[in-house]
Image (cartoon, rainbow, N blue to C red; front, side, top):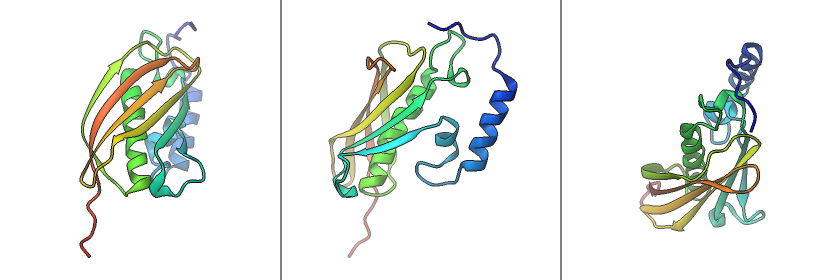
Length: 158
């Protein structure tokens, strides 16, 4: 386990923030928080039409900027990444939706490495969908699990 620094490197943090500010736009996969956390997105199965995607996989590095005072990945960052994995999947298959409720279970701390988050449908409906997201540490161990209810986008009447 790496020793948590007493302070974050100011120059590195400013450079990172400047990159996120320069590279963001208010669009899925490119909004500020996604750029700040260095989120990478993959939708599975690869090659399937968007409406048939079943999983949104997100990866991102654990850095000093997202650690809590104990040196592990901050729980709020974990929750945000899991929420984003589900929301981006909804957007990919049906358009922008909204989280109605979300429950998170933290299983183990994540100290370092690259995190993988996988959001998926457990039951997809027309107006509501039930979803889950799993967050894995760099060594592939399950570190957090979220379940959520999502409001699906309203479809225009014919």
